[in-house]
Length: 398
Image 1 (tube, one colour):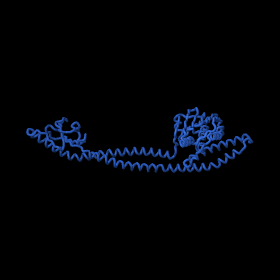
Image 2 (cartoon, rainbow, N blue to C red):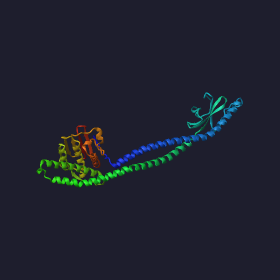
Image 3 (cartoon, rainbow, N blue to C red):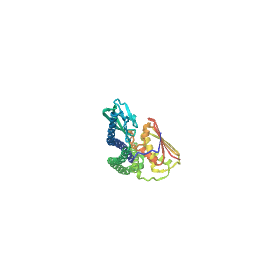
Image 4 (cartoon, rainbow, N blue to C red):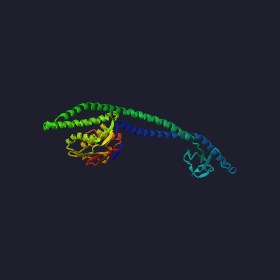
């Protein structure tokens, strides 16, 4: 699997992700509330318009009924259906059969209603007590100018948008308020890590320096073995110290880039980890081409190599093997350890992610590797199978 431009998981990014998720859910709920409110408001505006128009249409309906009554009485004299340029009308019998109509949309008549809008017109239905010319229902129709519609939508957009901005602003303030205790706790944890790592540096350095001055060849085997155990423990603590220091001070460290002798650096770090590997009876085989250089911060490259070697030792089986190969544009660290499945490979660069609690560590090693790789446009490729070990390749333009 190839992982390019990996993004390291940081506290600020975690806060941003939490904030985005909260705002997303909050915005969805706010939009649902606004849509519901807008729907209710729109219906109320429509009902208000219909009630206002109903008074006008009732007058037209009375006029129509008077005309029908007159026509019913004096049918032989007039025989003319009552008309008015202000409205259109229709009459229906008790079986809902149309008797006569001047409506624009007679097919949309809904005799079971009283007043409604349809196809750009407003229709009012009146049920007669007396059947004039066989009429049971009268329909009066006028055009709907849709002014109420435009005004309602204008108000919804203006006031709805204003409320949306207020709700979103309130959501951001609430989220920041909820994040404040977590941010304070993280800040205290960072301070604790910084103070702890600072206090660890002096005694660990003193232990390693004094161990290196001890001539173990002159000691008794049991004593030499004890000294070696102390050295292994001190080197483990030193590696953890370097990682924690990098995480705690990463944003404040200015990169000191230079042409680094990568061959010498990798060999030095392999020699450093041999003692840790020997404690698990793990053999390290190298194929390092001399004279390879890379323009990079030497300390950061050392952190990258250290974490690859540390993981190869940590997740290897007892009596296993580690193979380190360096060529122009490529560094490969291969182990015979527990390996990873596809799902684990996808999550391997996440900070604090651990797949084997019995192997120790904090789950920050490969996250540091990802941060350094991202800074220097290095490409990381991982090939791993569960139970068959892993191979990590770091590539760059040679």
